[in-house]
Amino acid sequence: MAHETGYPPLNTLKQVADGVWIVDAAPIPAGGIPLPIRMTVLRLAGGELLLHSPIPYNPSLQRGLEELGRIGHLVAPSVGHWMFLRDWQAACPNAITWAVPGLEDRGQVRRSGVRIDAELGNRPPRLWADEIDQVLVAGPVFKEVCLFHRPSGTLLLTDLIINLRADDLSAVPRSLARMLGIVSPDGKAPLYLRLLLRANRSEVARAAERLVGFEPERVIFTHGEWFDRDAAAKLRRSLSWLLGPDSGSGRLLSRPSGPSSVAPWPRAVLAGAALVGVAALVAWVRRGRRRS
Image (cartoon, rainbow, N blue to C red; front, side):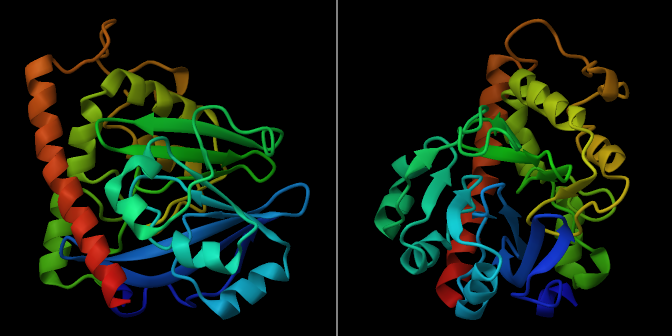
C-alpha cells in the first residue's frame, strides 16, 4: 500500500531510459494525504548527475549514485521541493544547487540554511542547453520549472501533475484526493493549484503549450504513477483544464487576447483561496520533514 511503503523498492535507483533513473521514497503527510515522493536522476553528456527534486538523503543511495557519475547538480524545481536539499548539500559540497526564481528569498528557506547558487527560468543554462529544454510555469506564489531531456524524450514535472492510486489510500484520504482531482488515471494539478495558476492563465497556458509540444515519450513527476506509455496523450489530458481539445495544434480553450482570462476581482479571490491550500500543503510537508 502506498500509505505504508510508497512505490517499492524505495531508495533504490531504477533505470527508465538511457541516462535516466528514478528513486522513490516513503510517503510524507501532506494535508491529510500520504504523498509518495520521487527523485529523478539525469546523467548529462559530460558524465555529471543532475538530481531533480532530491528525496531525503541516504548514504547508500549516494554511493549508488556515485557509481553512475559525480553528483554535480541539485535542482529544486518548484517552491515546495527544496526540503531535503540541506543534507545533500552537506554530502555533496561541490554540487551546484539550482532553484526556481525567488526561492532563496523565502524566509523558511533562509532559516533552513539551504544554499541557492543559481536560478532556473525558461532558458536552460549553458551547462546543459544542448540536451535539456526548460519551461517555467508561474502563478501567484507558485513556480515550477519543467525539464525536457531531449536525448531520452523524458519530461520532468513536480506538482503540475499528481496522480495517486486510489486503492492505495484509505477512505478519508481517498475522498480528499478525489476532491482535489489528483487520483489516477485522471490526475492533474490539485484544485488549489489550478485556482492559483488560473490567476495567470494566459502565461500558464502558453507554458502548457510548450510542454505538450515536446511530445514526450515519458512524463515523470514527483507524486504518484508517472506516464511510462502514451505519455504525450496523457499529458494533454492532464493539462486539459488549460488547453482546448485541439491542444496539439496550439489552440487554447477560450483564451482572449488580453493579459489574463481571469478578471481582476476573480483573480484575487482565486489567488486567496489557493494560498490557503498552498499554506496547508507547506505546513504538512514541514511536519513530515520534522518527523522523518
